[in-house]
Length: 521
Ligand SMILES: NC(=O)c1ccc[n+]([C@@H]2O[C@H](COP(=O)([O-])OP(=O)(O)OC[C@H]3O[C@@H](n4cnc5c(N)ncnc54)[C@H](O)[C@@H]3O)[C@@H](O)[C@H]2O)c1
Ligand SMILES: O=CCCC(=O)O
Image 1 (cartoon, rainbow, N blue to C red):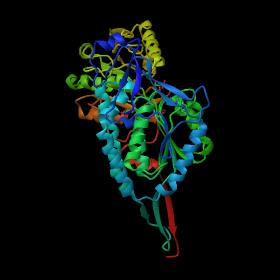
Image 2: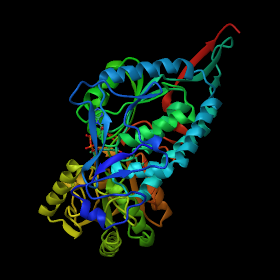
Image 3: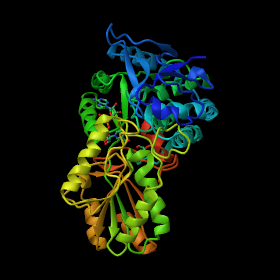
Image 4: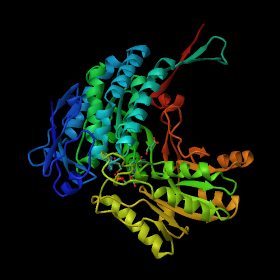
């Protein structure tokens, strides 16, 4: 059995006093054991084998930290562009055979992977919690969500049809077939280290492509565990390559993938700023792009809203993964007639959260991912307070729990003058903005350069249609704060990205339409 050492120096007192699920933690060092120890991989998956990267002495590995403690979790082999080239070569060679497999064969492989992910859900969830920090319950939810994309695209693979199109020329017949693109670059974030891989991978494999995946440097373990299951599911070698790389090497890796002529498409989930950089780099080879980027989601509570529904809705939308989700509510607009009641009820619910190490029983919310995030949240809250926002609960770091914890926070009297109104918060801060009229709130909601998700609560069917149609976003939740599932076309408009993932449309972003005109009939 492979065991990973986890150092627990500064947090030892905290750990000693709590029960951590199936994880024996001692004072200075400890071990984590998985039921399926083969899931703990620290090397790159290239051409069907786990191998070391070719980084020269000094930086041969990079460290993964546990965000709950900021302590060293494990060392991962470091890679450079030579390794990405080897992975692209492997994916390119594998594409020759994989593109010719039947859709049913690919579907069966995806079903195998789906079942393996579910069979290993406890281990995968434990890994997610350790490297991402979210609660174990949330991690189990993420594994189920991740698996659902594999199931969905196993079902979609055999349903990619071509067309027969009438021609103006009676002697011609026009038909289309859909063909895979080739080698695809997949750049995934740390906030959903399993689901953001499977949402892309399920679709691209169903379509017959091959992949080189670069997981975020914060969360390579989940990606590599999925890589092991890809092998166990029976995918041919080289079809899926997973190349973790350090923070320092990430920009070079991104550029290499985006500019590589053999890579036919890049799919990225992350910030709009990085998305714009990758788009510029990809222009040199005119790559296809699917980008799922930042949001600034409005969450509107109209005066006719049912607060028994709206409060759980805002909790689900705002505080999922401690606010570190691209579709999280960012600006919560509340009608002035119900503002005080809504604010009081929200504060009451937020006060019930249990913040802590995600593997501790009962913990509902974990830490932020890293120091940069904590500093950003701190500065947004400071700016809001300096401009007369009121802290209704929280409003400060919770460093007694660990260096990156921030108290779940509700800010009242937020206005458009404040940075928190205009920037993606990506943290556990609910900012409440008072409004008077539908026109005013729609204008405020749309006054942003991004448009990923938007939510609102109302019991009036006319208003439901009017507001849903008026919000400048890719996805609307009307009387729900939870919109994500495999059947949903997931993606944004404006600067929130390009393309749609999941759903019946998701596979088409990974296919070329080829037109065949047959003449002289
Ligand atoms: N849309 C999402 O789901 C999502 C996920 C993670 C982060 N974010 C955004 O990013 C912000 C902060 O997160 P961060 O500090 O990790 O941000 P970041 O912009 O530094 O990185 C975001 C992601 O992009 C990758 N990345 C960064 N530079 C890259 C490059 N030059 N080439 C290729 N990949 C690159 C990182 O590995 C990471 O996964 C958040 O506030 C949020 O706006 C969004
Ligand atoms: O944060 C990115 C994706 C979140 C989701 O799929 O709901």
